[in-house]
Amino acid sequence: MNLFKGGKIDYQEDYLFNYIFGISITFDRAQNLEREYFIPYYGIKSGRIYLNSLGVDYNGFVVLPFLGISIMRTKEMMLNIDVSIMLSSLKFREFLSVSPNLIFSFVL
Picture 1 (cartoon, rainbow, N blue to C red):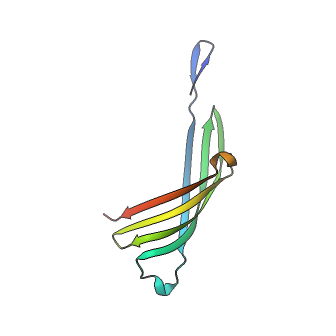
Picture 2 (tube, rainbow, N blue to C red; picture 1 turned 60 degrees about the vertical axis):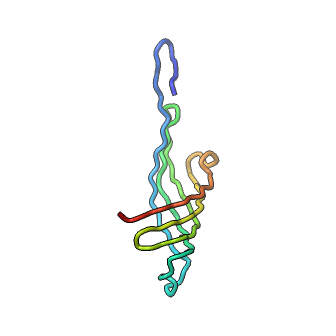
Picture 3 (cartoon, rainbow, N blue to C red; picture 1 turned 45 degrees about the vertical axis):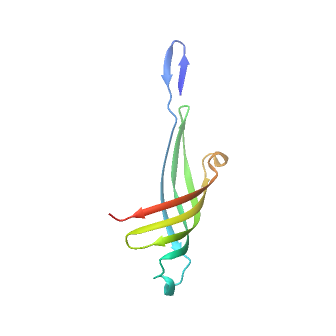
């Protein structure tokens, strides 16, 4: 955002930065761990969020509980679908959101 002040331009940049760590756990029992399809799981991610808006710095915590299903999981690849909700201590109403995710991972 550019702000014009008394003949000179003052550049104020808005930015958002966050880092998140998490864990997921399956609902299945130990007897079913060899299964490769439709494995339900849940988990939580948490971290910090930083925001600079019009030159004012904000920082807070963020928590994302999620629920998902591993559609296919092999040693070479994984295809998951999950839904998470973002809960933030910083501007709660603005950052409150539900996010569906399609995740494809593979080993090189």
